[in-house]
Image 1: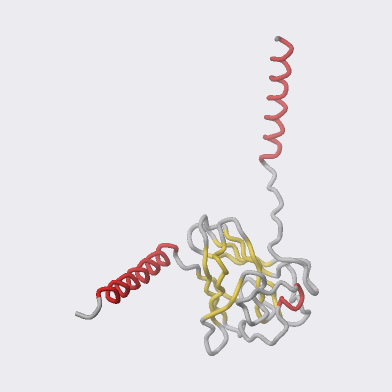
Image 2: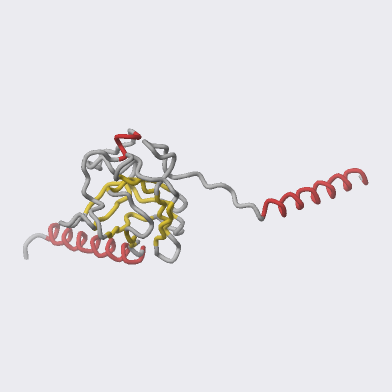
Length: 193
């Protein structure tokens, strides 16, 4: 019995020491982007933060097509699912010219018709100047999940801004739409008065 206690104590001490040594080490996070064209990973990574903001980090990768298209990774660290993000720039980041990321990765999806959406993203609300639009995530981008898409121009972290809709606002909008549908349904079943 004494021998068993010594082994357990020794194992506990060794395990604790290993935990202390590893506690200061940050594990490597897998890139949300595949290798494509001239790039081995994303050109920029957008991190969706718990406070409702999005921060943009440059990785040092240039345009994946060698000219003017940038692969964008998105990592959701917000703590909740995110359905979309709004992107605004001073240049025409939505001036899609047919050489999107799908050409390089083959990761198209059924909703995106631009070729720039990657596996989970499609674009809406693109303004006439092609400088602002919405990147929508099919089924929502879950907390801790990641995806990627591409935009025009050789972008830097200062090239555009990201806005993340508040989950409470989206919930309120969804509740209002459901309420309107319920009222309409009641009127249909009640018939004319």
